[in-house]
Image (cartoon, rainbow, N blue to C red):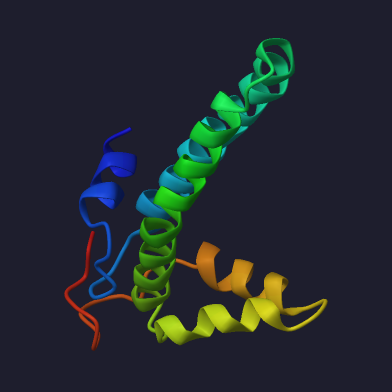
Length: 119
């Protein structure tokens, strides 16, 4: 949970580096919260007839887009790549796979142009 809060505290910080654990724990908690909100919205909103939980779900998703992109950007910096490499995800069929490989790689040892070694 500390990683999740740390990413939210760096809401729009696109500089620096993010370790694998920071990025993947934020992603895990974010997906779990989004799934829970979506599940609750699917159960409760039809019963009460008002999309209250759907609105909460949409606000949560919109609120976590920027910190999620910032964490992804910093994670790419940690592997020694520019954050602009996230655009490779838009290449059909292989782009997402290439980005995933970059995101699971270990940190670049020592300092790089994006900051000091985070470990």
